[in-house]
Image (tube, rainbow, N blue to C red):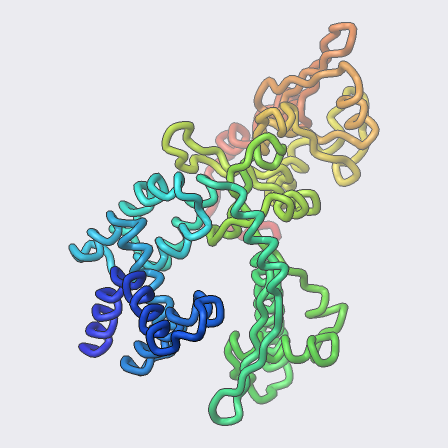
Amino acid sequence: MFKDQFCKLYVRSCTQSRNRGKALRVAQRAAARPRRGAGEIGDTIPLREVLAELAAALHVGERTVSNWLGDGAALVGTYSATLDALRAGRIDERHASAIIDAGMPLTAENRAEYERLILPIAETETAPATRQYARTIAARLQPDIVDENARRALAERCVRAFDLDDGVGRLLLDGPAVLIHAIYDRLTSMGVAQAEVDAAEEDSDAAAPDERTLDQRRADIMCDMLLTGAPAAGGDTGLGAIRATVQVTTPILTLAGVDDDPVLLDGHSPIDTETARELAASAPCWQRVMTHPVTAEPLRLDTYRPSKRLRRLLGARDQHCRWPGCRRPVRKSEFDHTIPWEDGGPTCAGNLEALCKKHHSLKHASLWTVIQLGGGTLEFVSPTRRRHRNDAPPVVTAAVRKPPWARYLDLPAPDPADRPPF
């Protein structure tokens, strides 16, 4: 441990004199070989000599020394406040490395503001969290780097294989983050589903238990799909029918194409806006996040499509299409937002009503309007401004006779010896 600290401090001390050392090497080579011009030596040879000598002395790779020198130069020349925080012990080397890496694509005029925003976060968060926040802040200050990173990721996509110890190999896939997360999510879903199927078979057939972990199941399913095109169990009607799910947070103005705030993938890192718009276009469900206008704190989560539980509630309340005079069953109807979702209308029972497809399209294509009066009661206003009240079936029933709770109170006290009639 002491050796590692000494090596890093030694390399940092060399950072400030890197340019001076490079010039000295050039002069030394020119004196040793006066007949060779500077063009023959090349501009990178002196620096490579320094890297090779330091790597040999410190018993590390030349790339490691190059990274240390690069980080040191960035701290001394660009991120002086980060260097002060590192010296004072408020952050460690991993935090500094995260700040440097995320700020690398930024222009010189954005780096001072970037450091001012990220440094207080680095002093209170872990290094991995700092890296995620740093990427987001850099993308907000300079949105074009997200698209550039996406193009680079696409250009540098590759698959690599490595040999490990004890006959184990490793397969690495580098590609766009959206695809990688989607692949991992699908493998996880298939692994969980396979474990549930295996557990059911073990209970019924008393077979030997499958003690594979979820990581092992992911690996087995991935090998099956790459080698045979389908998982070993289930095929297209079982595990193969499971699809991947990824979640992205997209500012509404960015989605509309009028702003360039970054789009976040699962809270990890920004992705390019083109990919985000393609995902939004094909997404089965949008979740709208209401945030505080000043602090940006999430206050409420809303979705366009009502949940299964909400659909059951609306089905029990409406029972049929609520358009005046229409009796089409609710199972053949659609749920319409009284106040359109795109205009801020929430997805809740107080802003939804069942309409058959014909009347649903008529409401949106004509001057008919609907008003929620509360308690499941609707008021339909025609283009000629005539108003038609429509009560939910339970409301009509309650108006004819006493409500169930009132009838229950009128019953005589039950005999403890009586059994329920079912």
